[in-house]
Length: 109
Image 1 (cartoon, rainbow, N blue to C red):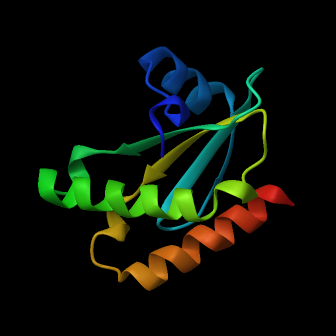
Image 2 (image 1 turned 60 degrees about the horizontal axis):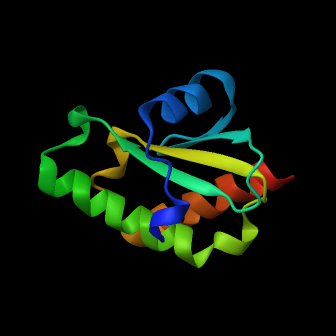
């Protein structure tokens, strides 16, 4: 992800989570909300209950790779927050990618 593709403001984060739509499963939740910008922006949220800093950063790196691989499938004129749940800690990357794809497919329908 490039710097211009990141949701940085805490106000924007809260607005997308509180007022946007959501799609989720046992591992990941997508929050999304329409915006005026043509290019989608992404934010990744991982709570402290998920694990220590090393674990959380690993999950965020994996999620950034998944976002970059599937960037063309996300709708334009939307901002997204991807919330990672505690269940993601012990699953292999293949399963995480599969669950990500399933959610993305449900969201674009």
